[in-house]
Length: 126
Image (cartoon, rainbow, N blue to C red; front, side, top):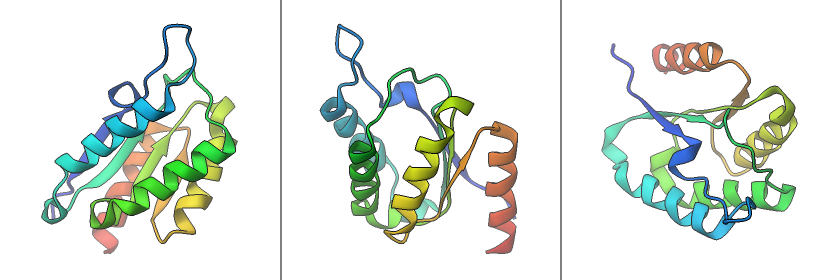
């Protein structure tokens, strides 16, 4: 059975201010726009690639991001893999925990290949 994976690169929704600080409100709006493109019947799993992000999200921003993703309803109910740089892995794990507490299937990775493998395996198992 074919696996449908929607790859979202962080530069598609992470925005910074002219002085290089994270523009959380603008980033949140763009993430909502991306979610609006995915229709519930599309049956996509999502790979969120944040490896090239240089901005740091505070724990409360990661918690809020998980909250907003959970509000998107069925669009994020399939598995979501978050790929990040090694130095931000603990942040990605915290996002994973926050998302899982909201009933989402999110897993953090530092390896793009392992993330794809997890998504593909999960497609066969479901």
